[in-house]
Image 1 (cartoon, rainbow, N blue to C red):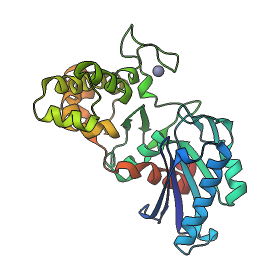
Image 2: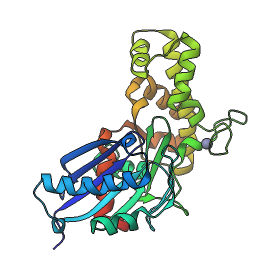
Image 3: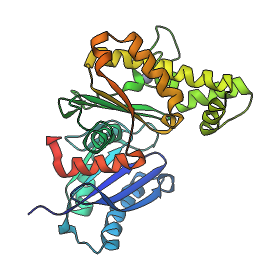
Image 4: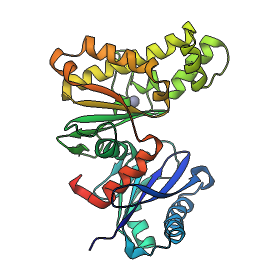
Length: 308
Ligand SMILES: [Zn+2]
């Protein structure tokens, strides 16, 4: 008999979130720690292992009642080997076999994948992309990551590195990106870039929530900034839609909170500029599962493994 429960973990640059989920991937209990409290790699790994023990103890469960642990990670991961290539925003991780290390510590099967892939898996199974055979889910934040579902399965690519929407070039000339590319989408619509634009335009720092509020109240300069975000994102999605002929594109993450300010523009650009057959088919929707998506996706992958 397979164990009833599963553990889903979402490791981000800011938070380490651990949750216990039941068979239907409903979160039963959750624990959130600050990633920055653990500067050394070994400390962070111990915090993950200890948290699994604490979540089990809190719910009066033993190891045998948990089938597996899944972890979403903020960087490129070889999901088959359980190998972390590196994390762009957490130093000290290079070619670390986190699966092996953790399995030795906690004695439950561990599966790892990139966080954007697992968020997409969750939205596809239980959220806004449900029912679509072909879909892409993207998260807008400091980075722009995406996960692609092709014919009902997560498409990871030949080196488990597919879905880097943020590094799609959107111009011939433009800023150089950390990835080595030029004029990457992320350099136009990543959080940092928007903040820079805001400072230049208004002469002071303004939180993005406030920028959304200002735009909604008719501030033309604020509207223009969101409009440009929608334009660049829309152009990138025209390429994606023409190439993959998707049914649904789901957008989540911090910037997506700007809501209709961005969505209206993105939908307009895609409907006007993508090829008519593809444009007619695709629905562009807001993500449903919010910040729990990563943990839910991690749990689905942990339980169902390579079949997803
Ligand atoms: Zn790039």
